[in-house]
Image (cartoon, rainbow, N blue to C red):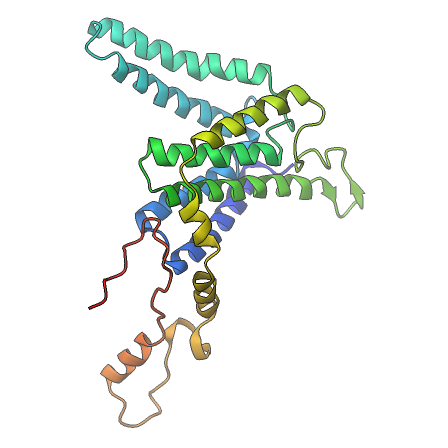
Length: 278
């Protein structure tokens, strides 16, 4: 299997490439794009939460413990004394961080259900729910964040499968086929639980119409195709007009501006709406 550093590095590259396409498509505001991209990076290490001492597992349960402890604290605020609220907050923090992690790893197996496409879909739906109702983001942004996380998740599984093939020794390791799978055939009980959780998460997901219409927009893909390479092979807008006599600085600036294509995407998942026609 690939190590943590490799997963982070490759996941960052994949998320960065997707973020570049998203930015070029002008479908999301920059402040939302940062959070969406980070979801993709998180997805690239998330499958290793089933490793007891892995950094993803420790970070996930640590963050979850902080989040839930403050939720409980704010819920019971003004109902108890300061000392009692301290004890409730600390008990929730330690209970989730260590108790929740212990129970989770007691019933989970490395390369089990969490290394499957089904689990990736579950986290896609869960991410959409969190972004929409937890962070208050637009439904299109929520689904896009889930999509980024799913792509990062799949990147992790594919990397693990690639590392299961020893190219130089010309052999396939015993772990081959255990990372990239539809579901866990060895532990059908775990598969059934995650399948039910996936259905439940889907029920609470926000409407996906904006996201579906966005990624299937012909205008958006046509615009991306036009922006893929510089016009007239003029990389980084380096315009060689020095040899032409009488060329002014303003003409050079106008020529450089002509290389920038205006946004043509009608999608509204957080980007600034287009100006109304005059």
